[in-house]
Image (cartoon, rainbow, N blue to C red):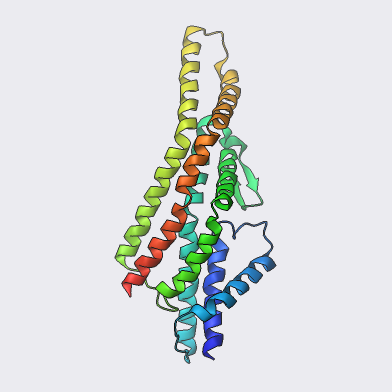
Length: 253
């Protein structure tokens, strides 16, 4: 009975994490594959879980299930924050360059996705596999059962304060990532404004959009090495965010 309940709770936490975490939550990955991965991780994790006293009360059982779902979703969400920052950076760039009007529904992510946001997103996915971060995410998920045993997760004011701080760091990362292209687009706007005052015959509105699009793409290509270097430094922080959250939860107990 104890082993069955532990297996259920472990599977629920892992599945909730998989639903929202980077890489594993991709819409292109078949649902059956996600279930198989969750089940495989469950079989590996169950022998490592500390002793858990079986729950006889149905209400307590449902409460523990709910806590495991919320904790798994919270871990996955925090590990996804870096990708959220990348998407925000793409939104900033698209708005300044003029690609906001070209946003379209992306069936892969099931959202209205920006053009530069998708470019940065796939660059970040590439960096994850280069740095083997997906292995560290799985390790952090398994280690969470030692730091926060089944049914022991609880939120405190310190934890909420830490999550708010992580949100601010996400916006800071997005601004740093988007700054070069946004500034270059602003420079183009200034130059076109000066031209329109100097030579009124030039149709600035017709020139502005293609010039900003072409110039921003050239700047993007020139900055790819620097962007990859920045992402290699910043992407591992998704693991750091999740680890800090797990440790904060474990200290509440």
